[in-house]
Length: 608
Image (cartoon, rainbow, N blue to C red; front, side, top):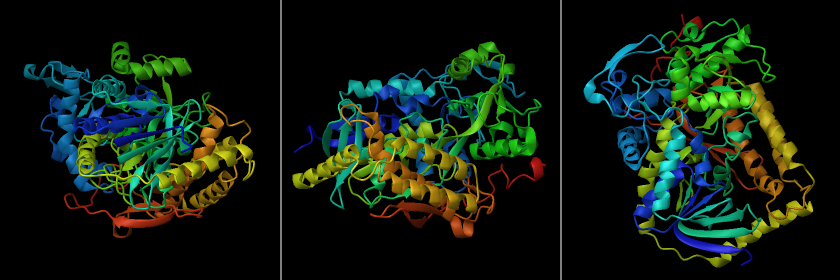
């Protein structure tokens, strides 16, 4: 075979963030051989960028008293705008408290309850009893009835990744980093692994397994401005979509975080507002209570983002020295220097390093920014992908569907380890019952297809389109046409632009030699898949003629449960320049559709 190396294992894990690594732990503990592939060393995965915390109904603090999985479940369903899988949400909410305690046992240094009376910046006064001192504490987050977001200051993802990766190391699970999966190997019914490209030297490798898990994170980098790391390009979903058999679910459901900091758009954690921070306009007016008098800055993320853009449109934005966009202000000065530099030290460091701002004494510019992909590879409750046996997906790469059309802050980081645990057990169970006879002719054919693609890119056989121009144009098209507020006209324009970019992406030719560790070739290989992913978002949004959660159509501003209480499934057929959309119903067996209790449906003009 022309591939440099062939690796065989029981379970292949593509990705090394928290969901991927947690599922790898379950498989390894079941006695299975596991290999993890990663673009970067695991401790550089995007999971480390999660700041604010993990939702779990521990009920240890006064503001969380009486919390339970049922309350967490209700918050999650309302947050999703009734778009989530309620069976999955119930399973998640019941399991996540034990996951937090397991992470505690493994060594995560959770912030702890301190006994006594406290007065928060919001004016809330509480008293935590002595018997609760030392237990895992929690902070307030948007869209929740109780304070349940467990945290380690504002570096929760960082600490959890290091601890979980340590467990991976203890178990001796091999990690092949700087390795990028570029194609799934399958026979139309079963997945057998993948073809991967070594980013150090450009050589192709084959990985064969009884089960393949995709845990590659989100697709934020299809937008020009995103809080996501540069590795979050949706590659796992793209290679699954490219099979023509595996659908992406609800790709139009894109979350915009209220507080990305221009011009770099790094996240300013929701924990800043959970700890009592305010959003201010150009007149230094705290405007969110005007729109959302109950939840204020802590309505769900989709609502706060829309209210911010709405306020800027009304003429209250700040002319920016940081970007071409107007922005608003995040104010945490009143929390005090000790609080800011102890509990919000990561964002304080980011603001200082990137904008020269000390948030303990200065305002931080913020603007809603693409942050999370609620959609992904559609799976069942066990994490098994639709369309191919032996293929699984978890975390942000998957549409498991915990989040529906808007996820609550803190639910995604909690989902990574919880889905990794729940679905990882199912992967282990499936794999232990499987045998595989690998058809090496089939494997060779997949390698040859990728070799031919690379050869054509280097030679310019199909054309000389510039991959960087296409990527920039895609990001701009998504920003201009598929953003927070959407209309049919804008979406039609966006789809048309993306279709043209997709056709151009099939004619890319390299400017460089393509030899060795070549970033131009790496991008050129995956560029068609990125544009396909963008088209799934844009076309799904165009077809969904309602507003639900993060998907807000100004020309269809109401949620339409009669016609649209269903999940989008986007397939990509060979030779197409648009996805084929199908739909499946979203049952609501536990909590029937109702009012979320915040947002446009609950409020009158300006929340009054």
